[in-house]
Length: 208
Length: 208
Image (cartoon, rainbow over all chains, first blue to last red; front, side, top):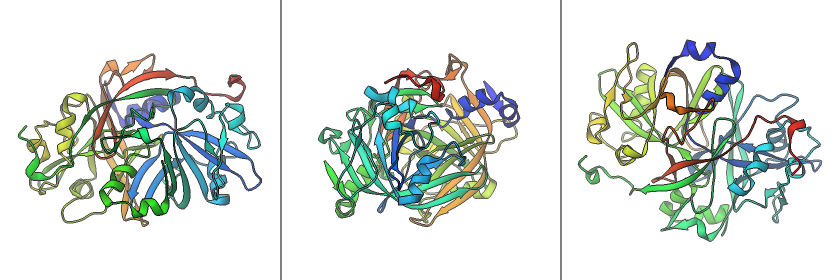
């Protein structure tokens, strides 16, 4: 199948959303946990976490344009600059997915979707207890993407927690951590490791 | 295991790179193809493609700080504003991985890594023939991330090509397209679909 820019423009809105949300390939499945300054917690599924750098350890994620109905995650982050990123595992994929409902701000998705808040000393935002791979993040900067009103939210990792079994041969193995991927808006995937190659230097490139 | 920001800062550089490149979860495995205005082609593996919006259909990717040695992809895009994004499949994961070597600008990774250039009418940048899921992109904007010198490069989809078998029940299925994920710097994963849920409206949230 072959679509041009004009074909994409002419698509039915829902068909376009489903297709264009899938074309980048597999996306990481994470829950972002936050808390307002009045103590209301929020947790929501995000598939747009992206690695920005390792020193300092920076991750970004994309926020959709803020409206009255959506945007509780970003509003909470603006209030106190803290959030958590928690890997989703197969056991609670369904709970995680339903956090995408547009609940009112005073409704906690933790309760509505049966996920458990977990707290550590010196960090205000709630972690997801069911996740075995999670990070406490400190907000650093937000970049406005004027082309479509989205926002790249950048934070630094302050706390990183994972199981010892995450490490296989000195590397994190996302099959062992039971981490999950997303395509489009609503399909979830398990991961099966198929290959690992060394860091590449030009003289070591094999003859293909 | 529990690491603080200070623990991460104190890690050996390579250990930190390996860990922090993995913590966001699974990343999409794509090859970006470009051509300079003097006709030198380039293809390189990228794991940072991120969906920004569907109307217009925008994707972003992260470029590392530009040096004399690296950055041929972004330099070619600056010259003629075109690039291609091509999903990686298991059959050529090894070829794709070795494009990460720092070849000189006048060496084409297509040739060095045995990948095949493919062209379509009215589009200058090379596609990867071995990929069955690919896009022709038009550069729109670059946002500087001053925190670490990286760049968010944003483009619009002008051409989208995929196999008819990509669609399962009206949705793109990344297991059927044989798309691949990456963790860290050098581990590759196949995808196995485990669940698909409807678009969520609050009254339809199940009792958990």
